[in-house]
Length: 321
Ligand code: AVJ
Image (cartoon, rainbow, N blue to C red; front, side, top):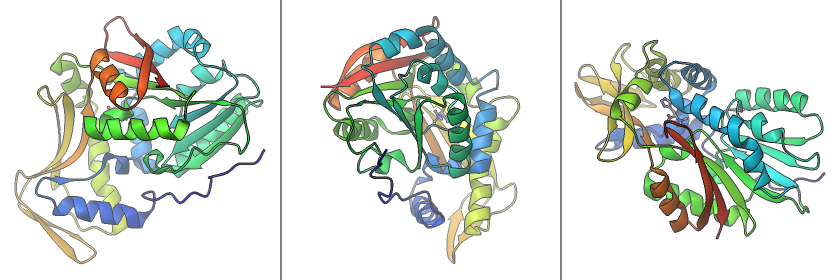
């Protein structure tokens, strides 16, 4: 089968894009680094371990919802379909839906972490030998077109699990969903996982696990800057700090400077004061009705959503309006 758009220029997965984004982020008043840079090989592995901790409920809750409702979900999606996953990671949840795909389906896995993507593709290809699988190493926010077979009558469906949408501000999320609606066209649908608002104590535990994996994940960003950019950073110069901000409806992760210090990258100096922070992640949380409204403003109709008994996590089925 012929594929198009595979060579569409994709950026931000290379070290030059990383350097530019880090330096631009460190020049800001409130310093920040985009959270997509967490996911080098080490960061992706740490994230897998976070998902196994007792405190980090999203992965296991979303998996349980998929286990319970995958038949109903796939029954509402027209087949045969082109199943496109945004940010597949290790794609642990993907088989729960893939097992219901027709043999004529095409499955497209998109992720920025190349080593992990290769492993994931090999594993799914072995598990589903009849389904055509395509791996695309790209930032899904930068796609100019969906990487699909040239001529096909497959109905496209985007699978966007993990509450990755929470990493964007509501404005950015709306923009990204609008862009996805345009990419997928009329008839398109999307299954998207969204973490729900809840007791702040649950969030604070989930992003401060006792085994220190979230801390290691956050600090790995500095280690990656040293490895890939030759950044000069004081050892033990920063601490992990994560908290739920109920006013903004988001978990924030920061790296807090332990003392006055200078970070050097490619000849540029960043003077960081004691207690100053580098904001490394937002993780927005939505009530189902809030998310439906956001989706509607981005050109999607919410056909259905599923949740768990605690109403901790939601999976929405959206259709292009
Ligand atoms: C993968 C973006 C959904 O926001 O919960 C886990 C990443 N950060 N622990 C999240 C993450 C800290 C995660 N997402």
